[in-house]
Image (cartoon, rainbow, N blue to C red; front, side, top):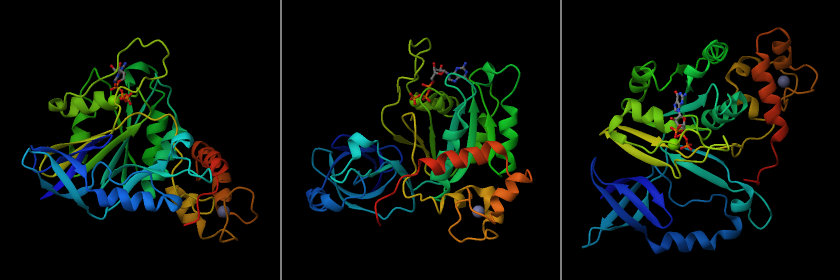
Length: 317
Ligand SMILES: Nc1nc2c(ncn2[C@@H]2O[C@H](COP(=O)(O)OP(=O)(O)OP(=O)(O)O)[C@@H](O)[C@H]2O)c(=O)[nH]1
Ligand SMILES: [Mg+2]
Ligand SMILES: [Zn+2]
C-alpha cells in the first residue's frame, strides 16, 4: 500500500493511506540497521521525513510497517543545531524539515516577533537550492499602522516573489494563499510566533491547529507547534505546518555557490572576472558593480554578505 507521511513522533510514523485514513507505522528494522552501520559517514539526521511517499503493509491490529521509502523529488533542510547533530568530527548533520514540496510560504510578522529580513533571505536560499517556489507572507499588518512593511513588499516583489500581507482581523490575503496552494504540497516556515498556525487555520478552518497564547512573558516565542505535520486538504493539496525556528543555516551552501540563490545576482554573476567570485572583495566583480549602480538593493546585498560570512565548511560530499 502506498502512503504519505503525516507526522513523526519519536519512533511512530503516522502515514496517510488515502485521504482520510491515517495508519500508525513502525519502520522496518533493516532501515535502522543500515543507518547505524553508516554512522561514521552519516550526513543526514532522519531516515524518514514528513511528506515522504512510503510503502507500507498493515498488521491485523490496524498498525503498519513502512518497508520502502520512495526517492524524494526534493526536500527542505537546514544544518542541524550543533548539540543534537554534531557527529564525531563536530560537523553538523543535515536536518530534513519535509519532502516532496512545491511551494514554500515563508511567514514573517511586522512585529512580535520583529520583522527579520535576514531570516527570510536564508529561508529563500534553502528553498531556491531545493527548487521550491517561494511565496512570502507578511503577517500581523494590524501592528504596523504606518504601513512600513510595504517597502519590503516592493523589494521582494521586484525579485519576482509573491508577497501576501495578512492579519488575523481581516480576510486580506486568504484567497491568494488558497489559490497558490491549490493542487500542491505547501510548507509554511518562519520564526516562532509569527502566526503560521493562525494563518493556516484561517485558510483551512477544518485544521483547527493549536495557536500560541498572547501575553507570553518572554516575548521569545514558545514553540506552540512542536513537530512538522502534513495535512491533506483534498486529494491533491497538502499543507505542512512547522515549528518556528530562531535561526537557519541552509545545508550544502558554499561561499562560491551562495550567490546563485540570490535571484537578482544571476544576470551579473557570469560577468565577474573570477569564476569563484564570492562578490565580496574580488576585483572585477559585476555583482558589486550592480550593487553600486543600485541594481541590487542594500537590504539584500547586506543580507548576502551576512550569510556569506557565516558559512562554515561543510562536510566533503
Ligand atoms: N496582532 C496579531 N496577532 C497575531 C496575528 N496572527 C497571529 N497572531 C498571534 O500571534 C501568536 C502566535 O501565533 P501562532 O499562530 O501560534 O504562531 P506560529 O507561527 O504558529 O508559532 P509556532 O507554532 O510557535 O512556530 C498568537 O498569540 C496569535 O494570536 C495577527 O495577524 N495580528
Ligand atoms: Mg504554530
Ligand atoms: Zn562577483
